[in-house]
Image 1 (cartoon, rainbow, N blue to C red):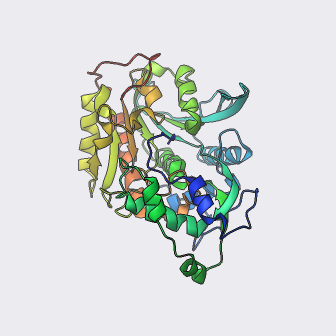
Image 2: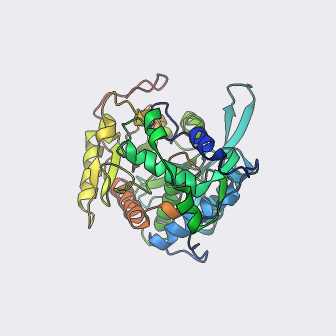
Image 3: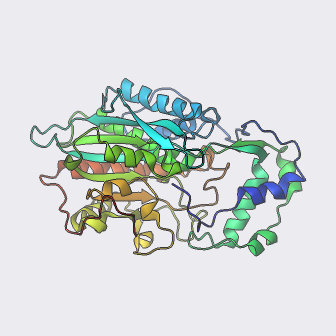
Amino acid sequence: MTLHQTLPRVSRITATALFAAAFTALTACAQSPNTSAAQPERGGYSPSITEADLRKRLFIFADDSMQGRSAGSAGHDKALAYIVGELTRLGITPRGEDGYFQRVPIVRGNSGDTLWSRNVIAVIQGSDPMLRAEYVAIGAHSDHVGFARRAVDHDSLRAFNQAAWAASGRDANARITPAMRAAVVVNVDSLRALRPARLDSINNGADDDGSGSMALLEIAERFATAAVKPRRSILLVWHTAEELGLNGSEWFNDHPTVNRDQIVAQINIDMIGRGTAADVKEGGEDYLTVLGPKRLSSQYDQWVRDVNARQSRPFALDYQFDADGHPQQFYCRSDHYHYARYGIPIAFFFTSIHEDYHQITDEPQYIAYPKYTRITQYLFDLASFVAQQPERPVVDQPKPDPNGRCRQ
């Protein structure tokens, strides 16, 4: 998710300064301590949505070798190659401009230079001769924020971030003040008793948005391997450059590779791997935040609720961040907005901000995998439900100006 100036995140600069005296062996090269206790096996995948598959995929996609997946970088290209390799293996139809790819220009504000990156786009054709020309779109963003110029000790930084986040009440609406930061004391000696300092500079982006990207890939596999396909087609889009200003989703919607008017609804998946009680004030195993469906279609919103109610263990859907004028402006900060501005009903799912957001400590070993798996299954069920309906969701709310500025 794109950064917003009011976020209660812990400053990397503050944390770096805090530990610079204790850890002087800093390096300009991107590196990570590989802190996972046990890397998953990288064998085959199940056609079902499983915890083992999601874990395996996320450890690959958020691996150190991806170098933080900054849009247009070699590490990001490597991550996209993994997605495309899986789509190819599954026989899913490319729907980009060059196979699975759509080139996206990103103009750098300071220099005016153009950075080129790529969306990945694919389609699973529907089974109904009349409805297969319509699409249920599902999206996630493949990029993250790269790596820091200097490395810091992973364990000490995470301990500091956890303490500062706890001081804020684990509340995404709160601010971590300088006084709160000054009050945080990390017992470095106790951390060193467990292991030596482990230098880290890679923003792996396991939750943001490795969790969404790999959930989308699992959902794609589930649809592709199903004996009977849904009536409508499934449009799969891994947007690039969300972190740079929603560039990939903006470009796709302004230059769609399918008939945009035939996209009946969109599901956006961005950060669905956390949201436990340790992460979020209101969090827990059933906590899931939703934004946007009722803004264009009360019917789509009802479908979101109905499909959730049919889960073996329904989620406690939290709409608090969808309030008009909410200070976090989450509705304007992820890729769904560029579908909504063209009048496409959207539903955005995430599990809220946490202490590792946009930090080098957002790594695969901290994901809540059982919950992550349940959310992925729910989103597959939601997409399936929408794809099976005889009519598209009714747009009964005012459409925004596609050329206007986002307002929440």
